[in-house]
Image 1: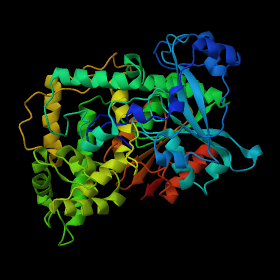
Image 2 (image 1 turned 90 degrees about the horizontal axis):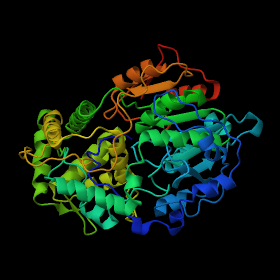
Image 3 (image 1 turned 90 degrees about the vertical axis):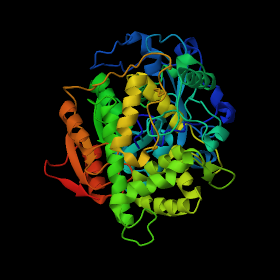
Image 4 (image 1 turned 60 degrees about the horizontal axis):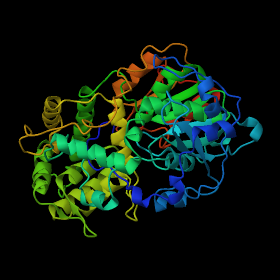
Length: 540
């Protein structure tokens, strides 16, 4: 899934430290202990980019460590995850430096989940490492879902399926934590003014950074969870798994992680599937406005589909659907409505829930039901859609998906001035009027990352004209609302990938195994390194 910027439904970052399993707090061990415990033989890192790298000798201990897989008890952060992280899955922790420029300093741990290859051991190719996107999505959770979706695929026969929670995410320690579950449930956890209501001062952004630092283990954690550090961790993971070359599948934000890895460690890459591409040349605000254009288009498609029914809560004239929706949600700015179990639905939660549902057409019936309830003064269904997307367990426990989304983006993206933020906020209301507040947006508007510690380290554009890589498989859907189709062609040109066009209107497709045509191309590439023909297309 793609959030990238902390807009809807990322208005509500998550996951309080007070409910983390105590076993996860035993994260960091001293680097000296690591040096004593792990083997000295290593597969040295390589870099295709200009980012400064420590010497291979400094990282020998990290590259030489061997993961000890065992029970996943103590890894899940929600009851649902704990029920999923059981046999035949096995878990381990990878030790990496907090700061790669100071490898003998503080260390952190990356949580890893694995399902061993199901076929003949002699036919095993290696590990297939997954990233689900976000940023902030749990790779461990993704590995369990992927294994179920691809249960009959030859991919599971030939590869160990490996999911990892990137630094700061999920079961990795320390994890980003800014809000309590109660604050998230009540909507008191806003982290952006884009596509939302309200005003902020500089003091508000300072308090946001301070509370995130307090819950996450210090300012040094907040400034170390960017994509380039995650790519370094990914290469250490490759070595610790015993793979000479990395086989990687990333979707949505995972295409950013994969492209940055290819730029930095291209010599260590065997194969890479990038599905639902974020454009490596687009900085905010253009990228954000492109996303909002896609969401408005899908809102219009939702309205057109709904309008065929006389009971459609958006009315039978699709051309007036945005106006009808605004009349439903704008009053929630001042007066939230009941949403079940003592909770309420405000404007930000309503627009965020609807935006979440626009990613996937199969969710649209639930949105229609929710909008029907909304007309009746009941916000339960819309809130539920947003909860599921944002990582709220049925028990009421939240993952830290949206908090990590904020933190990683603050590390990656250039920060906007109040003037730039106000202009972007106004442009979003024009580009995507279904999220417009109907209020004057010339008031105090701030970038949520304004007071974040450290400086952005990604560099956009990234992965430019990278040479010498194996052919990658780039998958783009013509009607993807979050990662537009054209971005796939841009990235394919920059890294020498082959583009597979998928006709349809959803966000990502390969890891979910929802289309036989894509499934076949996905397996053929990963197993035999066979890329689709130039004219091959799939249809959803």
